[in-house]
Length: 288
Image (cartoon, rainbow, N blue to C red; front, side, top):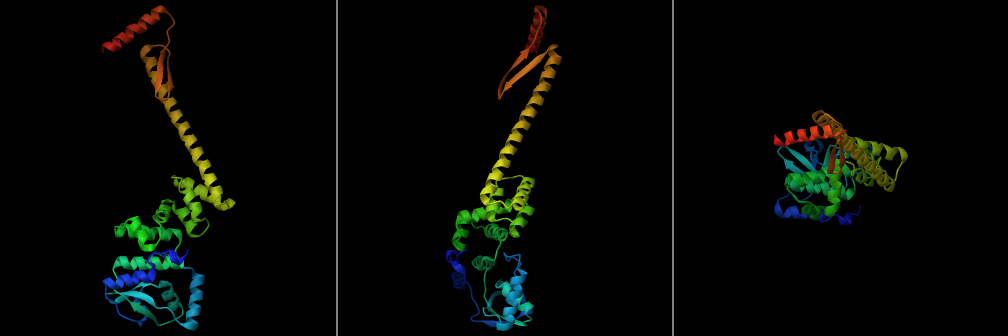
C-alpha cells in the first residue's frame, strides 16, 4: 500500500485539526504510567516478534519519534504511537517523548486509522471495523470517509462487506490463512456453514483466488439445484394432498397436472351413470 494514496495524510490531518483546536507546542516527556492506550484504536492485534525487535531498538537508541496523546482528566490517551509506547514499556523506560494535542473524538479516530493505514499495520477485518465505526458513530458517508483517508469508495465498501463473513472465516483472514481476494469470493455465499466449508477446502488444497471463484460458483449452482428440487418435491407433496381430498369428494380417481402456474384437473369416470353422478355432484357444489 502506497502512503502517497492516503488522502490528506497524517500530517495534513493533524494540521487541519490544529486550525480548529489549541495544542501545546513542542515535545515533552511524560511518565509511561501516566499514559493509557486508546480503547477505540483500530488495531487490535500486535505482532509480538516485531514488538520485541522495536523494544530492543528502543533500549539502544531510545524513542526517536514522539507519540501523540490527548489529555483526558488525570491521564493522557494515546492518539498515535501505541506500538512505540508498548515497546518502550517492554524496554523498561520510565518516560516517553510525547506531543500533546487537543482533538475531537472523531479526529482521534481518523488520525489513529490513517497512521495504521500508512504503516500497513491493520488486517482487513480491523480496517473494516474501523471504517464501519467512523461511518456509524460520526454519520459519515462512504464518500466523506473516502475523501478523508484517501481510499476509493468502492474499496471502503468492499472492505466493510468482509464483516459479513462468519467468525471462523474472519479469523482465517486475520491469521493470513486466506487472502482478501479469497474472502471476497466467499462473500457470494450467504450460508455461514457453507462459507466455512469452502474456506476449509481453500486452505486444505491451497486454492488460488481464481480457483476459489470457480469453487464458489460450483457450490452456488449445487445449492440452487437443490433448492429447485426441494421446491418441486414440496409442490408434488401438495398436489398429492389435493388429489386425495378431491378423490374423497368425488369418489373416483382425480389427477392434477401442473405446469408452473397453470394446470388442469382430470376426473376419471367409467360409465355414463358415473358421469351423471359426477355432473350432479358438481352442480350441487356450484349451487353452494
